[in-house]
Length: 173
Image (cartoon, rainbow, N blue to C red; front, side, top):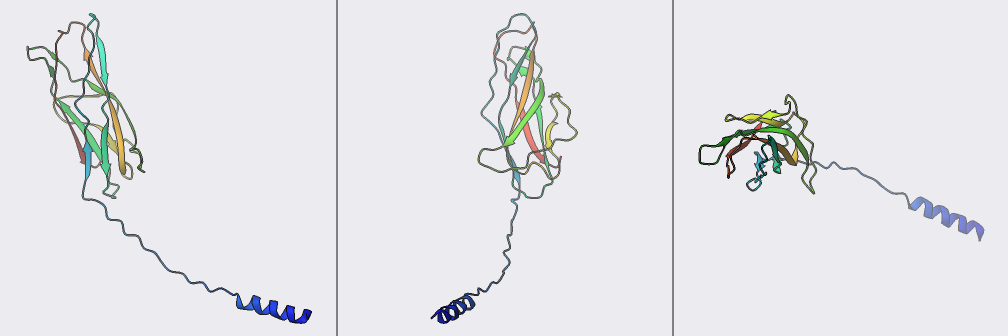
């Protein structure tokens, strides 16, 4: 009886040999044709004049989207008119003191590595690069938050001032 059990066990062991095979999976990723920049609502800044020079700061959240999949990088630029109250009083457009960045919530990204830009970046009437993504960085959806500083001199006139800022994104750092 014991011999029969050993033969049955040997038969079960031999018949349970598994077969394996392999196959190849291929993933094709097609990059989009462009990249984009989304802007926030209009910025608002305020201060109370006290006779001293002041720095008024605002930091709008910009959305940068690079789904091209090329890794060629991109850059952001800014130009601005002067702040004007409509009565002949003006304020200079200011400067960008710094820029913070991070992946947009719920998205993977490759953080932008900035090259060749030193802060503060003065803002003028012609486009000036203020942030960039060197090759191989800045892929995906990023939140970019530049900190704008506007200098309000101690001898400024009270009133409501407006300026038009033009922000742009271009390929390459």
